[in-house]
Image 1 (cartoon, rainbow, N blue to C red):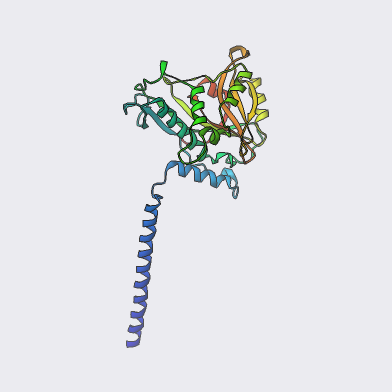
Image 2 (tube, rainbow, N blue to C red):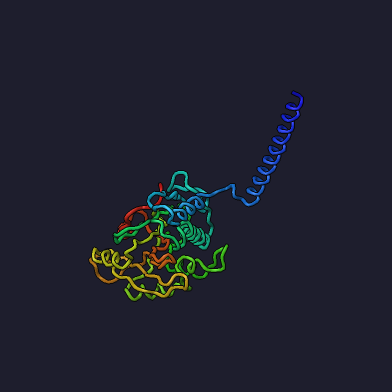
Amino acid sequence: MKMKKEKRGELTTQQIVILIILIVSFVIILFLLFRLNLGKTTQEDVCHNSVVTRGAGVLPGESIPLNCKTEYICLSKDGSCEGMTSPQIIKVRTIKEVYSALAEKMADCWWMFGEGKLNYVGKTFNEQLYCSLCSIVSFDNSLDMFDNREVSQEEFYNYLAETKMSENDITYLDYLYGLKNAQAIKETLDSGQANFGKINLNNQHFIVMGIFSDVGVWKWAGIAAGAGALIGVAFVTGGASIPFSVAIVSGAVGGGAGGYFIGTVVKGESGHDYLSPTIIEANSADYNKLKCKEIKTLA
């Protein structure tokens, strides 16, 4: 009996040592997590991780749901927001701060959905554009820095071309579209007798992007043009990582020449064509012209 008690005591000591090691290890892991700021997993991280998992191709894409939610944001000068209920309010005081906020949200959208490197919709045989609604943006009444409450898209895209991202040594335009300057887009628009157009701050806008099916953009563009959705699709020169960009121009009433800029299509590293993040009036006729097959985001 005495020997059994001693044996039992030795086992208990080992268990205590193991328990102490586990507790110390857990504390160290928690400390490292807090130091790395990994405890604050953002919705952007959650979305990006689900896109990467689905795009990895280990399991059928349709069996892995995308965990991406549409973000509701309001740009405001005084911190109020009449246009939305409980949005994320971003305070802006100048025109450049408005541009910066929009550029960041567009960059977040592009990053969340894989930067053109992943096929996150799986295999399909239809000529379709699968869209993702990253943000719904409202512009508060306090934004009085724009004439007629309109943003010139040409000025905004020049800002994207001239401004480097905070975490990368490239401009927003290069990151989003693979372009070094906005002149290539302007020349394409000019060739179609079109212009950049304006963003009306009195209306809500979507920040939306998309991926085209395996068949590609050209068949889709032909269908869209035949339905009066587009007046033209044209090449402009892109960068090394994104071989080309295509300007999408909204058709004029009656199918005549003219129109204005909606967005660009780029060839991603995955081999698919993508509608790069673009700002378009919410639930507008122009948005409907994109003929999005499915919205790959949650409300």
